[in-house]
Length: 372
Ligand code: SF4
Ligand code: SF4
Image (cartoon, rainbow, N blue to C red; front, side, top):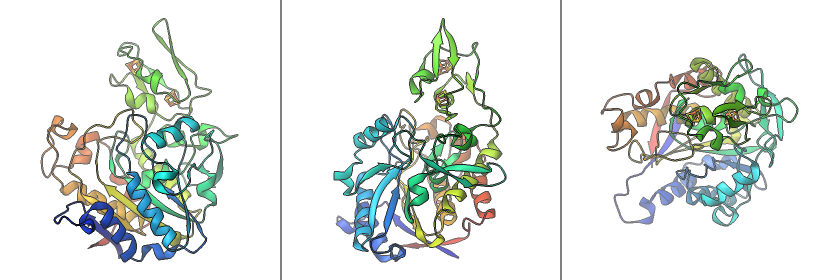
């Protein structure tokens, strides 16, 4: 049975060792999980840099603790993420969110280059066939996967699986385009973006959020450039009148997340990955949205394991036991104690991600928690 280590967010004494940075330091020192990394080995610390308005990312202080722990075993760490918007803009987002070489004491780099198309095709599975894994993540021998746990409009729940599945691959492959990138999970077929003129409020949020300027308005009519579009779904997600839709299928999406995460994991020796889930600032939506709403529950803590599926199951089990916060999306939706908060927030079959990941042999949903 996989072991999942837990540090609670509660600080019951005014001591550094009771703080979250202090507890993360203890997790990294006392669990022995960092012993899988070797002296002189390059190790990626995979996080999500956030977006211009989404500031609730894994904070730099925690990334720094992980970098310090890797340096203690003699490894050579760097912090990385894949390109979501234009690469140089994305590095600036990281910098604005406090993630830079000075703060984390390691290089902060883009895993698939400043154009976001530096990736290598890897066999995935029945749904995706192949997927374009970011070249740096493909080539690096070891990785600590730092995931900000939260809700998600498409995935229902977003943690380590989604961090690897979407964050470990490119938006588009250099020669094979979006069909082998993230868009292959977001949509099906040719992924034609549909616009409902009747519902559209002409707010232009879809145009403003598009990283490629693939949406424009001419005489109050939406013009979409399907040739350059990544099928990232950002326009669809910010459209609050539901005027935009990419063809999709929830079950396929969840299973494809597991497939893609499996493809990324297949580029590592199984003993060379550690997963750290941060159940903090648990907002209802993804870190790539243009704003971060208030958390839907209090901070819970940090979970750490070498089994991705176990750490995900333990995270979900803890989220489901937590009380929904007042004056949040949870209270707007009248979610009460004991409800399945993840299902009630976004009505998506989120557990399928874990079921499929377990079926694919990526880990076990059976675990035991050891609290430090
Ligand atoms: S975000 Fe939606 S409502 Fe606003 S302009 Fe775009 S399609 Fe219309
Ligand atoms: S899916 Fe929407 S936001 Fe993403 S690249 Fe295409 S048009 Fe732009």
